[in-house]
Image (cartoon, rainbow, N blue to C red; front, side):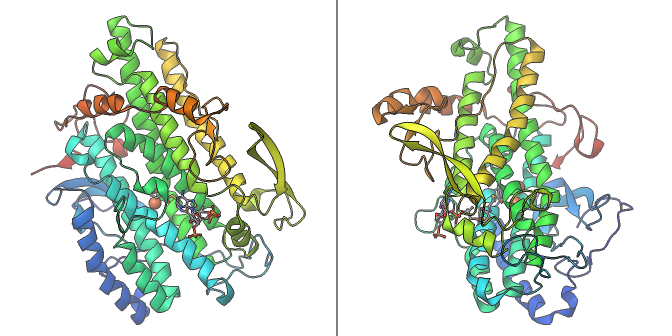
Length: 487
Ligand code: BYC
Ligand code: FE
Ligand code: FE
């Protein structure tokens, strides 16, 4: 497999086995057999629905080799079908108790409590479904990569989403018997945007047709991954908590790829405008003549990916959300750091909704508003990158600011699903919304323009003209490093 030099990372994972793991798979014959049966089907799925025409590529990838926070990964060139997708759990915390809900304070469960079996299985399936879905959505991107560096980042994200599927399949197969094995198979059968067997959640059936969409997706949608995994990492079901804690270690890089990618697009656009002496950001025609992506179009892309990701939090007021919290299965963002009783039966939370044509905040029980709260935490988390992108623009002297739309804008799920809300939070009529839509979301013309820029740039150290070079390489590699060896 890898040609990398051995690092001095703590190697806790047994790599002699077909499935690298730190869960003592060797001593669980039934589980090992079931996973070894699933493994070739996973490889078939990867070859059929994963990155297209990349079999011979040697990619400079990081592979998880342990769970020590300071040395959990090693880097080296790997052919992707040979990537070692392992099963890794964060270390067990001795004496851990259930941090919230009606079982608060009881010892964390090491087995699935019978009464919550269906609930837990559903959440695992939904989580697991998103991982392969994102790989499917990104299947064709390598053909138009703006550089070898970016291509490598795409593949890094892809193999780790594959590993996240392994992480969830491990839980399903180990703890849910025959039902779990069936779910594991079905996870390989659904396909993003397939008419007959689509992926479960909306955003995962959208297209990721170009690299700007990919960067926006990894910034906004992988961040839903972060928030949901944080909430599941609180779980009273300890194996789920430990699984999610390790997944979060990998997630940070996915969001970095997005933030950095969008930032480099902004940088390049502003530089090109300055070189050409254009200061009017609304002069889209002149900016497009420079073959870079104009800032108003970037704002439209932000609007789209933000709204479709907000839908992933489910309805703001949800009995499912309340049930999962009360059961001790899915907590809140940073649950253990919050200063309340963690049971919430007496608490309330303000939820925004449209009443008589106006947006108002109304009090709901905190339990029923669990999803609303995670959504609000996501919004705060996502706003940080917007500030950093604006700083890039400011430094170039161009006058323009990105904003996050009102949370009711372009929603399909929850309180605002039936309403027409402008990015400024104005309640509009349907006709008015449709008449102005193209100012807020990409039109076919915008999409075709972005697509026209998607020409591969695969020479070492070179970058497509619409995106700036990154300031530092992966794992401190030099600028002309061969991140992907293409035969
Ligand atoms: N699209 O009470 P409701 C990631 C369904 S991303 C379609 O509103 P609930 C990643 C819902 O399933 C993180 N359907 O919401 C990122 C339910 O259907 P059933 C993924 C939707 O249940 C990038 C019905 O509507 N992980 O890891 O409280 C790359 C009523 O549900 C949608 C998770 O989401 C939608 N947008 O919450 C790779 C964590 N929204 O069950 C990976 C696990 C809702 O009645 N999942 N519905 O048939 C959950 O916690 C919950 O299932 C949800 C929904 C938060 C998604
Ligand atoms: Fe993931
Ligand atoms: Fe991710």
